[in-house]
Amino acid sequence: MSHPLLNDAHAKMKKALDHTTHEFGSIHTGKATPAMVEGVMVEAYGSQMRLKECAAITTPDSRMIQIQPWDASLTKAIEKAIQVANLGFNPMVDGKVVRVPLPDMSRERRVEFVKTASRIAEDGRVHVRNIRREFMETVKRSKFPEDETKRLEKDIQAATDKAIKDIGDHFTAKEKELLAV
Image (cartoon, rainbow, N blue to C red; front, side, top):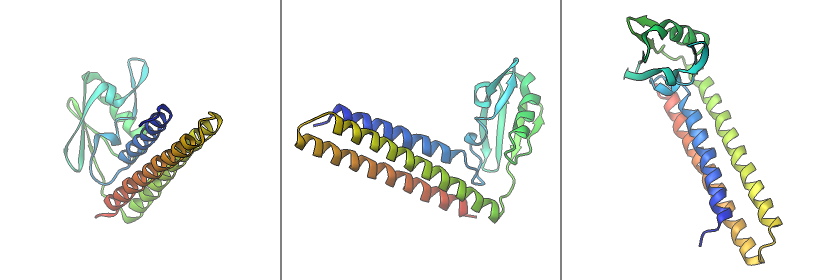
């Protein structure tokens, strides 16, 4: 039988895992993905907008990101935003689209990205452990019968172990992807 507290813990841990895997997605592996630029802030209509909110982002091949603004007047602003974001990309305006060719990555750069991925993974694990601690304290304060308390603690620990293992698996896959030349 499932417990509302346990469902809550699972949901929060899943959210932490999803956030961590999304962060991994923004790390450049030498293969073009829209996630690399979709969060770039663009000056549009007098305010800041995320790139994905004002353009279609596609990857025609593994070495190129193509950005098609909904409004052609934003091409220059998009080009400037990508340069200012300091991602190591050199965008080029080509008519109504902005093309972003990906540079080849040096070994040092790849190792740097592995370190970044490692930090993201550790942040994810810390977040999961904080959720675990929060729920363990809630269980202790709740004055459930002893057998229910023990079962909940065991289930929360199992969920924690699984979430931390999943983060580790995602990190291992990302590391492999980053170091593959």
